[in-house]
Length: 235
Image 1: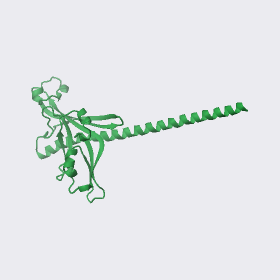
Image 2: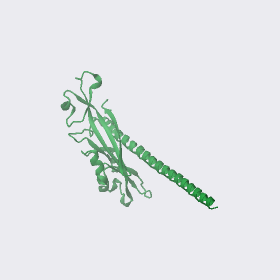
Image 3: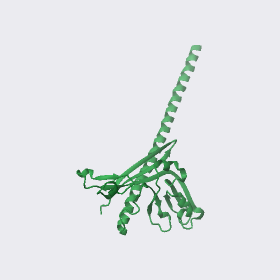
Image 4: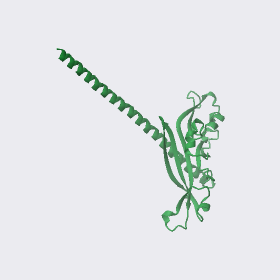
C-alpha cells in the first residue's frame, strides 16, 4: 500500500515537472516571438525612413532643376561637413518642403546626443480635437519648440512625441576622371575635403553618392540600418 502511494506521489511530481517545463517552453517561445516581431516592425520603419532620406536628396536635386538653380544647390558638402539631417519645412507657415541641415559630426555623436541630438526624429502633431489637426515629424527639435511646433495658432494643442529613431545622411561627390584607361574605373567616390578637380586632377563632379543611416534603441542594444544610392546630374 505504501509502495503504491509512493509511486502515486512520484507520478504526480513527474507530471507537474513535465507540465512546468512545457509551460516555460511555451512562454519562452511567446516572448521570443514578440521580440522578433518588434524587431521586424522597427526594421521596417527604419528602412522606410532611410529610403525617405534618399528621396529627399533626389527631390532637392529635381527642385533645383525646375528652379533653374545649380543641380547640387544645398547638397554640396564643403570641407569635412558631409553629414546632414532633414529639416521638415512643411511644419512652417510657408510649407516649403524638405531641406538639409549640415551637422558636421559622426554617427556616434548622433546616437550619444540623446534627445537633444539634431538626428533625433520627433513626431509632431496637433490634438485631434482641434479644428486643424496635423501629424508630421521633424529632426530639429529646437526649431520645433522655438516656433511653437511650427503650427499656426498651435497653442496647447501641440504634441511632441519621441519616436526612438535617429537619422543621418552622408553625401559624397561622384567624380568622373576621363584620364583613367578603363571605363568602369572612371567614377570615383570623393570622401576627401576638397572638390573633384582638387582631389582627382582633371575630374569633374557628375553626381552624388548618398548614404542614409537610421538607428533606434532595441532593449539594451542599439540597432541601425543604412541604404545608399548614386544620384546623378543626368539632365
